[in-house]
Image (cartoon, rainbow, N blue to C red):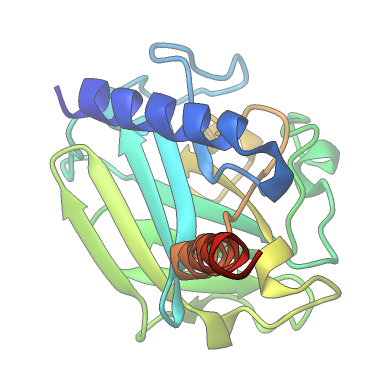
Length: 217
């Protein structure tokens, strides 16, 4: 039921975006086929490792990253929800792994959200290995995993933060590409829509300008 409701919301958002082509901003929403796992995945094909939809957006001083799975999150087995982020230095890291995977998925840093509510970051540019993300806010409810990632943890590597792109892949371990169950989007990244406040301000200014033209024209 949760997935169906989100699908409707995403469809409405997509239609709104198509109705305003002048904005030319990424949608921030992606739906993914349910029941389809990577052929290279060797783990148990459980619904909580199957991405149904993702949503990426600005939330104040955070990125709000939401992953909707095909089933409730099951902590009886390992589960990691990895958000790959391209800040400008992204590469297709998985292409060179075994087995090759993730063609078109570029990233230079990763937020790893564990199904127990903890999180770590891994910066491929700065190095230093896994670092606990103590300032991340993780919420897991039913089949939805949400992370608030502070903007100060993802400094630019060539792109403005509004131009960062994202991909979500669940996995059961950090050993090889065979641990990855799914990618969303499948072979690309999704961008961040502009903050709603900016859009509303622009609409308000245009409306005000129109009123002034009618009044003084």
